[in-house]
Length: 390
Image (tube, rainbow, N blue to C red):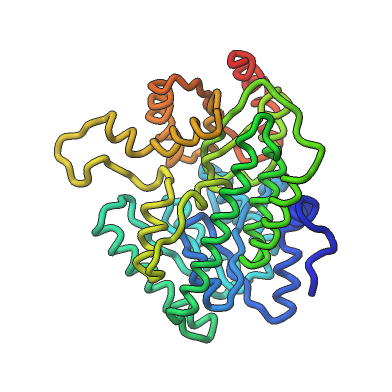
């Protein structure tokens, strides 16, 4: 069944507006859909077993009501939004859900899903270490192996080396294409707006990998060849933080005469900076997801197991990839955004701001409650920040 008659950016916008449309079609055709929360479940295993991975997001435009009966209001509103949508039957097309211990609240959602939401009978929680040294990678490999055995039961087949290798190659191809997409935002003005880019990234998380790769190829060609490009603006920004799956913030920033030319977020580059390295086995997956993905939930030291700490070396070990992005994309300033009650990112802000200060890069910190209404108070602060840079 064809997904749509549209192609390229118009297709990405269509999927962004109705994420479940394609996977519902695939499920009617006999495919099993596995939802995953956060970046740590290895999607290569899901793909290799003939299942369709679907990234689970909340909805910033949907008031949280049903989740109040299973979750306190003083926790991550993104997680509460996911629970709310699940309790309202919005994820009834899922055959399974897998999450990871990114934080205590992130781990708890899988247990709440198992107990309170009956649409997806398969649930699995990956215990992800909070350090990236070799023993932690070995432990995480064991966790991935446990997940593999569990999800083989859902798929009704065994994971083979050939299937895993093919899936890793397809997902690496997607990572390469995403990096090419972000390269289109290096010129001044960028060839692609930040809102268009986010629509593409959300669409990718809603499709089988092969369809996502085809979409990316069409978009890269379309953007490269189109005559009408985004208008010049006086400031080039990097946006950092946790999940942000709605164009509202990027629209707000661009209305303040600034381009978001690159990001370090859970819906942007964070999962695509690096490839899974051969040989394509479970250890390679553990190495990639624990070490290559740069998220504040994983603590990194310049020298593992050191007894005397060098603060500046540790900061550079954690954030030097951001310094490279600032240089490569010609960034003038950084917007640090975080969801209310997200301690994982909130506690990272002082260190990151100090590091940016040493680079001479201005930054601003904004916090929101994962709702469209929370964008309005942010607008004035962003405008003032852009004005100081301009």
